[in-house]
Length: 265
Image (tube, rainbow, N blue to C red; front, side, top):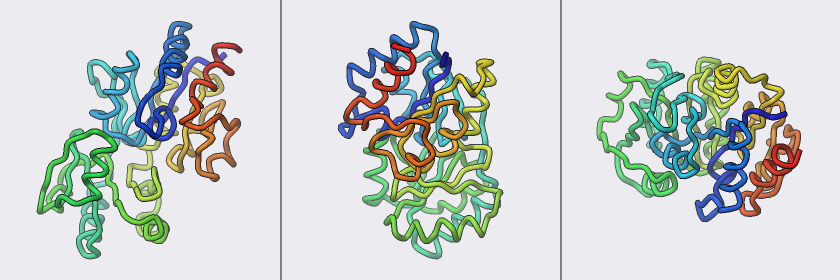
């Protein structure tokens, strides 16, 4: 029996219209009524993810910032937190300044950017979050950053990713949540690591965990769970490691998983 289900938000739980369908909401509610712990596992900020958790009436800890922050959905109690090492944050700010790259930093559940541009505005519209402009953004290196993101063209980020991995080694985890989002988090701030922490909190063996996602940043989460599910619209790399491939986010893929493995099992 599956006792814990971790669901990614963007392109997984929500449709392309940024909505959770009534059918998916009902399936989640039924799973919760059966005693299953249903949570969110997202790269989004807590301030953004908690709104969706509240819509679904989820009274559980949720995994945010790729796994760098676990907080309770209703009262906001911090249960787990990791930050980008300060020296790496400083180097990353400097590199982006020298190469004129758009970087976003996240401190105390606030989003900071150097200037307003289309990349920032599109991101904030997608995640429904506010932003703070800090022209001297490098000064933020002295503060703990939950995560950092470079937003640019996918081809450029594909070139930068191995360069940064070689530059920082195992002291930071570099991943892509979307083709144009390159994210930097603490190596213990991944979704997979956070899922292990959460499963332990619930005294739930990993064999009784389902993880559902669509992108590269969901990879270690699917590998951690007893049942790793890729969405029908997932990137090929995720489908290759998944135990099961469900329908797309526009076809209620999450609902299908809940009905197949929990409600009708």
